[in-house]
Structures are given as structure tokens and as C-alpha cells.
Length: 311
Image 1 (cartoon, rainbow, N blue to C red):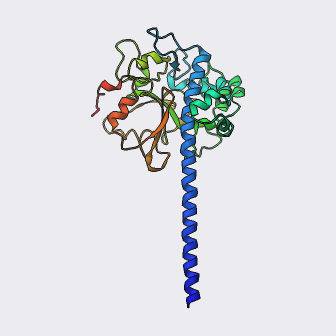
Image 2 (spheres, rainbow, N blue to C red):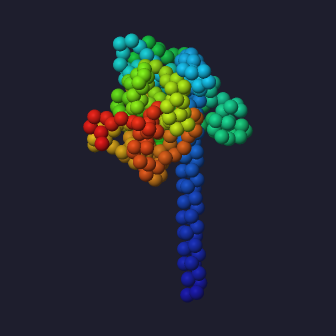
Image 3 (cartoon, one colour):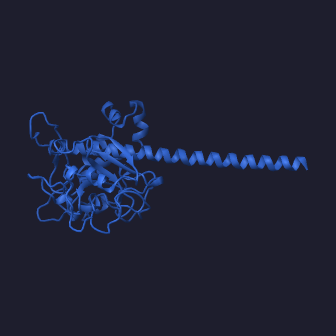
């Protein structure tokens, strides 16, 4: 009898131990996915910066001493073609992406890691995008001719490692990170001519947004540039809302953050990865006040105006 009790106790201990080990493994994987997600978001900023340099999109600061640089245009502008038919900023960045994701001291500083760790980190994101860029037809629609073939290429940098989407190989590959255009589904079309709309964010479809404009508004360290999404995923090749979105603030719209929200939904507890114009990346929780989030996605969010039908 005593031997039987000992066997039962040992089995119970073994089951508990296995359960704890599995829990630790799951927790470690989730933590690794969160770290990689934030790295992806930081690298988005680096790629965007390289694109601005390549295209010469950064105008001089409005006032001497203001911050130089710019957020790139959200699409490849073609006269007479609507944003959703154009190439996205991601497609435009293909020529610089591969070179940008190379181990170097400046990139290590941006990711806040030791330079020796970069090869391991970049192994999860670096791909031969230069060859893709050579085949790109920037004058054509995003899904026309060779662009359609390029658009089926899965880009690791634009996939959240915590919730990799299952997309058929014959369909366009998607992005799980979108540029933030401000408040309203039309936010990416708002001009920057004074007075700048308080709904305007850092991404616009047709033109770059100078850092100096953002710096003189809420500031680059408090204005969001990217956020992850889990629903309504769009092709990374496609311009328009597929890759650049404003926060839908109309009556009945889903919450901006969390499971089932407009942004986020890839990680436990509904946390959402975001990146700031200044280069930082972090997670925010569904507990964030929607008004605060709306302010964070605008250039001058302290006085965000109410949208028609908003609350």
C-alpha cells in the first residue's frame, strides 16, 4: 500500500513538473515573440529613414535648428491613380531594405542591443529584397504584371512572429504592421498646409511629412508612426489602407486597441506593439483611453477635433 502511494505521489510530482516546464517553454516563446515584434517595429523606422534618404524626400527644416528628416510618403505617387491602386511605401523601400538590415553599430543602438547580437536578430528579418526591387514596375498598379509576382513574396520584417498569418502561396503576401495616418479613415489625405488639421498623423499618401512639423507639434517621441494589426490584413505591396491607416473614430467603430480592435491582437492579454517617430517601440494595453491613443497617432493630438458621427 505504501509503495502504491509513493508511486501516485511521484506521478503527481512528475505531472506538475511537466506542466511547469511546458508553461515555462510557452512563456519563453511568447517573450521571444514580443521581443522580435518590437525589433520589427524599430527596424520599420530604420527602413523608412533609409527610404527618405534614397528618394531625397526630406525637405529642409521649417526653422533652422528644427529636426531634419521626414516620414516617407505612404504610396508611390502616380497622377490619376487612387492610393489603393498604387505601390505602397514598403514596395518603394525594397531597394534599401536589404542594405539597411545589415549588422552595424548604429543599428545596434536603435535596437538597444549589443552589436554582437545583431546577426542573430537580423537572421529573422533579412531577405534579398534588392533582387525584387530590380523587377518592380513603379509606374504600374500594385497587382499588375511582375508586381503581382513580387507581391506574393513573404517579407519576414512585416510579419508578427507571435501570430504568423496563414496565407496561401498564390495570394498576395500581407503586412501585420501599418503606418499611422492620424484620426479618421480620410486622415492620410489631409494636407499639411497651415492650419494643419489636428486629425493629421505622420503618414500621408501623396507626400512625406517633415520631422520638423511633427517636432513642432506633439514631438517625435510622443507621436506614433506604426502599429501592428491582426485583422483586415492588407497586401504589403498595396498602397492605401492596406499599409497606411487612420483610426476609425465614427460611432460604432471597434475599439482602437486590443483583441478584435483596429490595432493589435497578436499577443496575449491584447497588448499592441507600436513604434514612435523618434525610433522607440513598446507595447500598450487595451486599458489605454481611446482618446489618449487618438492623441498619440496625431501630430498635434492635444486638440484633436471631433469627427462627424464621433463621440
